[in-house]
Length: 108
Image (cartoon, rainbow, N blue to C red; front, side, top):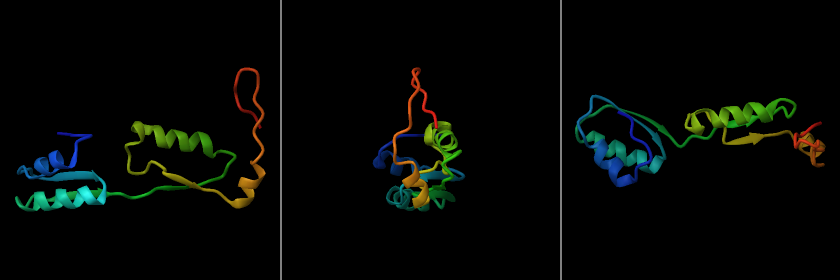
């Protein structure tokens, strides 16, 4: 059973049910509540808590790939990039706005 988008009280009540194993992905704060509730039944748990996934960027190929990775499964993957680490020189080189063609496509 997969349950998504619930508030912390529902998550806590759900975690208190006697499952064989419980997997939770979310914040550390709610993860603690889930672990506490699951512990009452000695339910084994797997927690994926609040990690951040940087993307180290080569601007020549990065934008399309980062967008794909972020939008994969609506961003609901533990490896969806949250921010980009870009060399300062590359940022400075790209400060000028990119020209736009008549059909609205960005070009170099």
